[in-house]
Length: 600
Image (cartoon, rainbow, N blue to C red):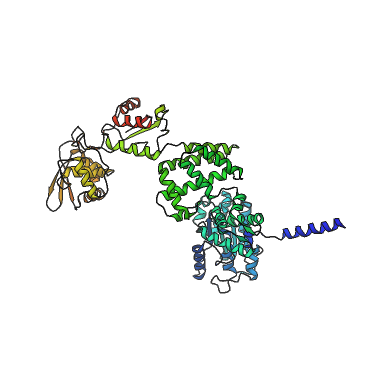
């Protein structure tokens, strides 16, 4: 008797489990109004029906879980179940319900991964000629269409280009790049963007209300951000929480289920990084793992957190924050300012490389510990970059070629705090300076406003009071410093400038300019020069160029823009020459590096 009762109970439970439908399927949108985050797509498809401009083939692309297949079913219902012919339909009608359950004979759903061969496509072609049984159209929905073989695509081309009037194709894919261009060109393409976090959050609240479950808003926000734009992923995570947390879902329960850390723990790690406290960082990591946090999940979370710090530090709006709470943008900005952008970028790169290694190693915890220690012991790269910029501005770079690459070496004990040269320093690009400048002058960076330029001209030549009293040739040379390409070369070939009334300058060029004079004096290059002079002098100046018979002086003057390429010189000799220059010696002295390559 007891055995019979037990068998009856087990059978009832099994029957109940077999009838259960997961949240993602129960709350799948069945009309365009229920479709979340794809308003543009829905509007475009409805307008096509209303204006009788329905194509014969459509391609829906986008990430997983954004509503591609659901939209394909809704579109099929709008075509076959619409009573007024304008796309409006009753979701409870017989045809609509049959399409939702996959039992409609006129709407055929095909899995491209399982039916990817040429034989299946041949069968599809033969069946396409058969008219629909009760609906206006026979509609083929092929999911993950990029999985079809090349032969299958080729077999489909002719039918896809000229199908029978009663046939419509709807292709869904997460990887449109794998679809042949011959197929893409025959389809109307709709790109499905990721669903916004706020829209996912609203949908999760709606589901919890219908399920009779209470959930903290912060817990649902965490699930929504974790889904990364995928509505289906968010609903799958919510269903896990409904099983895990019961009738009340909290933030701690979400972290416990996902194996992730809360934001306060991520902020604590960031504080350890900023303070260079490696011991505390390792201690906090040990505590997090003891609380059930997965090292891989923690590393990816912290990478996202550092990305948010970078985003806020460069001045982007708080709405772009993903991992952290946007309301904590002020704390993120404080970390970014204290750390420095160069150091922050290096930390992100280090952590990203460690995550890649962790995915292929059984010692993920050790790799994460090593990454945290490396980040904590990073030198202040922002300060190093500022030092390098100051060196470049205060030394005469006349003997330096266009490109010098530096590589760090083992630094002496007194320089042990300098561990590496930031990517912003190597290779080094240096601007030239005028010959008339005295040894005591400093090369200042060309600023954007004319007032700053006037002050810089005053520093370049103390005998002149304003930019208006400086010779036009010097003004043209200063403008050339901020230009690139042929416009800069044109200014560098100027031998003399004569100022005429009504804002016209006659510029005499060296004879080297005659070979490419027409390219030099193109409207684009003239515009660059006149715009630069306008910013410098505040006046509109028209330039007339005349090529003379005089060659360029051999010595480096106000018109030169760096040394001539060192043709025919061996690489070791170039390196020795660079090591002998003041600028490179200062770089090596401050940064502890060596010259490894010199390019013209």
